Image (cartoon, rainbow, N blue to C red):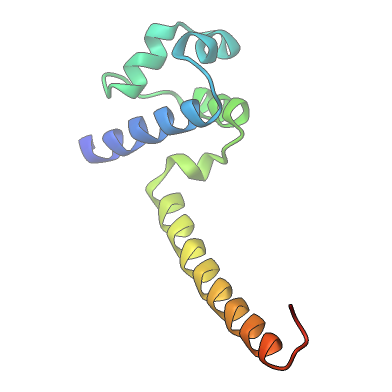
Length: 102
């Protein structure tokens, strides 16, 4: 349970910071105290699913972002993106060699 809580607390902080919000600002938008936000981020408490959904909406992150399964999906997408970028670089090289691309 602690491992998952640590994961969740890190993701909560990442999402808040990416949204450019302080703990106080996020708490105000969620209508909960900044102390609750701090407790979530310090692994002293877990947000309810309702609060997690609201955090998701405010930070514009999908709920899956806050789960380990979501992280696995994100990693798979990053790998796929890297493959596509490599293929695109190869295509550009071929087009340059044929004089079809500057």
